[in-house]
Length: 564
Image 1: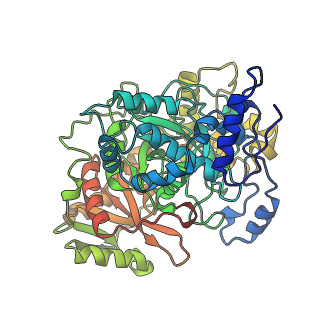
Image 2 (image 1 turned 135 degrees about the horizontal axis):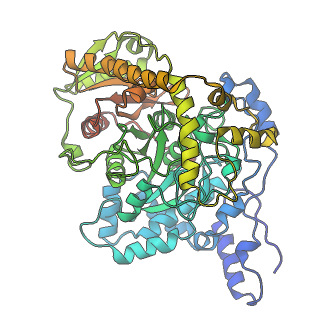
Image 3 (image 1 turned 135 degrees about the vertical axis):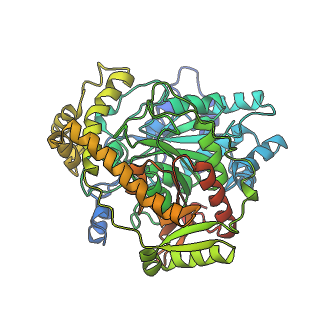
């Protein structure tokens, strides 16, 4: 059989079906079509790169857009035949039932026999192939797919019964610093290209409740703790993630860039991100999706490539609050391997009855400087007040976060080697053992491996802060930032404090407090902006209730125009 080539562009489904039929009818000794077909071809992105050199934001003056190492054919070939048999007519029939729907609605359609989990998976795969194989629409978001996901979905259809967790049968995408059996965990770094692992604790929890792991998504390399001032959403392995609301116009946010962009573009039901300081809140805000940074300890970190065991946490990223609560609940569980992990017996129901909450009588703190500087923030708070909420204007004290960077530097110096020791299975292939080793590896080909440098890695190895001083920094910053929030909340009897995007992410991070960001609107340019709720430790249930009430009166999220 001759080599079949598909010119990059939107997939012609009819052509794919014809190719599949021809292959099935060809002689048996011919090689499988997946080994021959070219679904994607690299392109010359120099013109696009040159055009962005005049961008107002220096971080968006890219040095590359597409990955120099990842062949998308390797990602997309294994499932190609299954996706090619999913017709455009099936896609259009299912679209009203799936696109932008929440998990309870999807489960209701399945129960009624109108939708199967297999169809749900194929619907999302169809979208992913349609947009990610076209160089004019790709977001460089999907960097791995679960080859068994269609069969797994079919099995879920057969085993479905009443009483299962709502996440059952739902396709979920994972940030590629989360260990997943059967898919390598790269953290976006070339040195980890072949990193094989078992499942992270939260992935075990998801699978135990019946979730379908659809694939892995791009991220800022090493969770944006590699280079200084470089583009967010960039990794040497996956290339430059792009924002569906404005490709090469708006930042994706980082480091969970792929989790945010995949949710915005409707590539799955839900996604998991991770945050040290702003890495869930930022990409959720930039992509007009709902993101929760939980209290440290609510979700396990075991099996996640670390920056800081003090501040790291995974968290749910979804298109609505209900799905966020469901995904959060599905990942929870006491992990004996994580010293910060807590038993989640808070006497709450995380996802039921969210719709019954109202804003009436709820008290919120609003930052005076944000009210003065941001009209969307002010209009949103006026709308909340009209719905019965009480807004208390705050003039918070200035809290310098002295030593914050040393927490990240010294934790990563210890925590990354521990991850490699405990979780990397193929140590003969992954020969690095600590940050200094990775730096030496990167310097062997700096153009390919570190085109934006490795300034933050340099800071890790040069930070001379003592362990005793670090302990004091952690204690002081936690107490100072908790006082920053607690005094405002307690003195004014507030239910939550309201911020914008990830503006106060560092404060919530060192306080180890939860923060929930929800779409608030769009700037005149079309760039998304979000409202962020911050509460006290382990008040996630309260924040989700408040977020659901807010979402009812200000449901502003729009599907990106090019991805409808």
